[in-house]
Image (cartoon, rainbow, N blue to C red):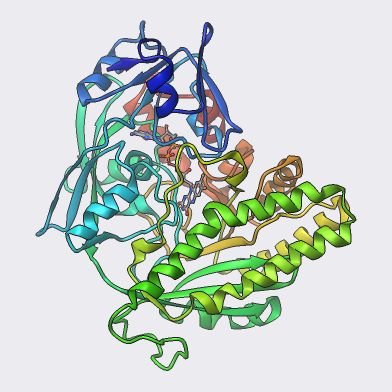
Length: 494
Ligand SMILES: Cc1cc2nc3c(=O)[nH]c(=O)nc-3n(C[C@H](O)[C@H](O)[C@H](O)COP(=O)(O)OP(=O)(O)OC[C@H]3O[C@@H](n4cnc5c(N)ncnc54)[C@H](O)[C@@H]3O)c2cc1C
């Protein structure tokens, strides 16, 4: 085990660029750089026994004790002011897979994209292949995630966690899996470290399988009139929204051998095998957009704030129109789902970082909420002159009870997720956006929806119905509040 003060600058700076040591403690910042916590102790653990030692020794390692994955959350879920941050990143071993059970077991600090690369070498893949590959497996097991779900599948990574090993608040090691503790596992899947520190995760995986993808661009009216057909098309549905232009592009994806999909879709250019250079180019361009080109252009638009409004808006609209062309470019692609996964390294330049914020809506209220959302974005632009600089995105998830605080518990859900290069205008927009989404019965993600207030989270339409059960489990697992942070206590009413 390494304490911060023992392995100061050189190695530390390389490992955690945004961690600063001072007399009053250690400041840890998230990847985006906009959330900071001042903990008393910052400990890098290398084994489950190291974690046990930290949890048991309340004098040397004050509460709250908070595990840290790869610090990519854009909310206060990583906060441990005055407490202890347990850095999991050195516990990153891939422990092996089981061909017969179709599972893979990893240490909690292993990055999802590294696990994915391991799986592909063995002809396997995750069920949920988020575009974001830098999520740690521990966070993937206990925090909210999102991706467009394939038919009959889930769009949240933790739904495919079949077992975890944790260090409990007493400092004991405990195995929680589908066979032994199915109800507790449901709570763990959305527990944000409140029930214990996860040191090992077992994911259910599946054989590697090709998917095909294609795109259609709609006007808002056209999209809403066809939404039922889109939802029942037997494909996964991801949406790129252009709210200021009243348009959107839908990305449809289906397993290559899916008989439900109409094979006459015009874009199935390839049959059977991926054209590797083309498919690889498509995904490189797409990943390069989110990881670099998009944010750089978005920042350029932001920096032109002093220019006449017609010019900045015109440029942003032209940019969206250009992105509309990306649909045909990406269409006809046949590839493996993990190709969309992208690494967002610690040393990403500030200018290449994006910010976003997601709310999910039940499918039956989504059409009205979406129409109102477009009007809200346009009205906000008229009143303040501020608009997001990148397309918004959204995902369809099927109904999913796998975790206690799932964001699609009640119904199939669809989301909207504004994306931008952050500046001052973004933070004012967020305040209004949160109120707007809450009024429309939206459900936020605790690690991906910044500036939340307790009422947004505890509303009946959000997590209100599930919270009593979650509170009861948390009280039972951690009566002394060893893992309880003020932020999560207030947000979840614990
Ligand atoms: C540029 C960017 C793109 C993104 N794209 C996507 C996307 O496409 N899809 C998606 O779903 N998400 C996306 N995200 C969000 C990201 O997946 C989440 O914020 C995720 O939680 C980050 O994982 P992390 O390892 O950095 O966790 P952290 O931010 O370090 O921690 C998250 C929470 O998990 C807890 N935790 C971490 N490890 C453990 C452990 N071992 N035991 C117990 N508790 C633990 C922490 O205490 C904290 O509460 C994106 C984020 C960024 C910055």
